[in-house]
Amino acid sequence: MNGPLTCFKSYDVRGRLGVELDESIAYRIGRAFGQVIGPGTFVTGRDVRESSASLQEALNAGLMDAGCTALDIGLCGTEEVYFATDHLRADGGLMVTASHNPIDYNGIKMVSAGARPIAAQTGLDAIKALAEADDFGPAKTGARATANPRADFVAHVAGYVDPKGLRPLRVLVNAGNGAAGPTFDALADALDMPWDWLRMHHTPDGSFPNGIPNPLLPDNQPATSAAVVAENADLGIAWDGDFDRCFFFDEKGAFIDGEYVVALLAQAFMAKEAGARIVHDPRVVWNTQAVIAAGGGQAIVSRTGHAHLKALMRQTDAAYGGEMSAHHYFRSFMYCDSGMIPALLIAELVARSEQPLSQMVADMRAAFPSSGEINFKIDDVDGAIAAFEAGYLKDAQTSDRLDGLSLDMGQWRVNLRRSNTESLLRLNVETRGDRALLNEKVNEISALLRTF
Image (cartoon, rainbow, N blue to C red; front, side, top):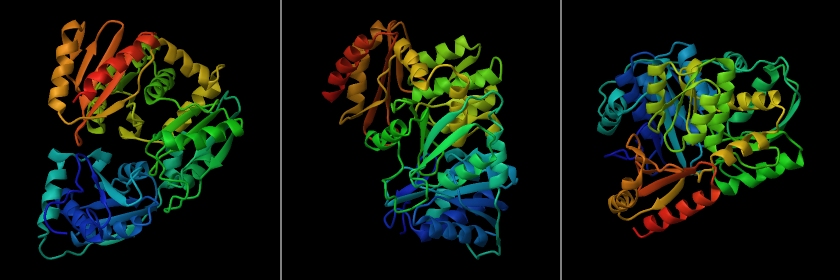
């Protein structure tokens, strides 16, 4: 596969197997990564997909031929590669994963020393150019080693919760046959909690007999929902394939939208750190900002995307950053995203509350109902945005273009932003306690956008 490598995206590598990504391309990416970021020692890991082991081996070979040491930590989650990169003082890390993508896809997530993200200007463009050129010169002699930092990772994650005074819980966990099962088992064994863990689809299986682990898809939610109710659980937790994202269900089996999870985690951190700074994305903000203000914290809005949130968290010394897409970042976890840390923090929040999780979320939904993100396939994106601005901008109390266009209309607020990769417009609407107004505005704006 010579020529342009279409598997390179804004922050990582993703592509169809045999079309955009194979072992030869993985080798070239490893070799290019070693030359651009190296020389040095680089952690590599993989998810459970059937193609991941051979792709990781090709990466390792490329790193070694670049004169680097490939430090293989085997089957793991993306956050374990982040942790190992920092904890073992490696010079970078590479995780072979396609996360929640279809079964015929795979990919590579990459970080530099300290688990810092690699973007276009910080190495990704150079890695892509070198891998495309496929002209590396003579191979050097590197090395391959193995490591198992899971016990240290588990000890770190377990430290986010305080076992004192917690009430008993029944917690259903759905690993989706992805990579989460073994790591969660090690974590559960290390916790001294009065909690009963109910495991579902727990065994890693790259054939994904219960479907691709993507709990954000509505079609994938009923299985977890039904199990929560059948097991009389206090909450449910489901992970995606590489478990850097987790999703929550209340005791009634209802799925909890991401913007309310951000607010719950903000509450959890403000209980641990007075006046905590919390970074959040700009799509749906009113509930998050109200919760942070009530808790004595400081809300800071960021552009959407992990590179933007992580950079702003570092600048502001924020304890936590959250996106409604279920990416959650933590200062004490190298400003990286994790799916295990939120799972423990939300469970701890429930165990310290006299309210069930459903009531905690219902109060927020009633105060600030939101539409959730609605995607529109648009032929004329520029025309649709222009029509939206012509219809609404003049009546806005305030507006900003931090990420798309956000308009505060007084009793309701809207964010409209274009996709970076597709001809899509993404719409979010929220109101101050008025669900009828929410439905009216969603229908009104949707009708406008669909004309394009």
